[in-house]
View 1 (tube, helix red, strand yellow):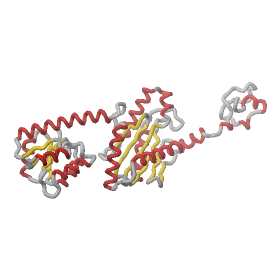
View 2: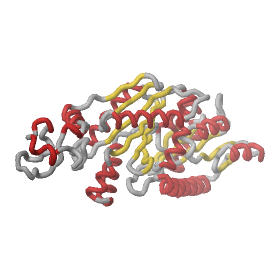
View 3: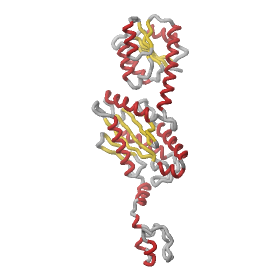
View 4: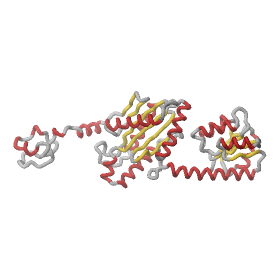
Length: 358
């Protein structure tokens, strides 16, 4: 059932509107602009019925606040007022109202207008969703990320809130595609996206597919240390899927993450935050992958410790080739020719055949 928020300082007028619309919609009433704005941010409303003439903050000022706030700017607003002058109607429509209804109004007309605007709202949300959702994974796409990131950055600047951004991608994904095929790779991308996105519940959070096997997440209001711990949980959840992978990093599909938390100012830009997060992601890969590396203001840094198995596996891979012989049968039949046999222990007769480079 669609939800409608009624903001009117007159209890009698609010009760009258509720009597007209009850049964078809879920209704919530507020008697001042401050409570109305707070409720509009917290609830998922399909329409707002807003009185213009109210004490303190009037309907026009309330409209400006609603359209300036990211969480409420998409909600259609019908202005209800006794001000019948054309100049007031023009002002309300220019501020973003979808309709302007003067009192007294007919119950049949107000019900029809409410129904029309809610249906239009549904169509707009459907089209917007199709344009902003990644087809493969069902999460937000890069276009939506670009649109919402800037809006949430400005909101963080306005309210002086910490702004966090995290970049991560699937470790050794090209190896996975080459081994298991691209259809299997698409399934892995979908599984990782589904698991990671399930952790982002707040309305101020955003999780999106940035491109290929890369993902990005932003959240407002969290300090650096909690953000770091939160993304560690997401990383572990992906590994716990236990999707088989022939990777030197892990026998399972894993992700590397890099993030940064800043307190933005009006002189900054969110692209700087993204570059720092990308740098942290590079550090996570350089340090062994399957980990989270996080920075606070580009100065302090937290990182996960390597697991013993991962560190041992990496140490084995990075041993210099000069300490190992090639895998080949020795014509003199004096050594096995295995890669694990040190060169200094080979018989003299095998030196010509087993030395590296042959």
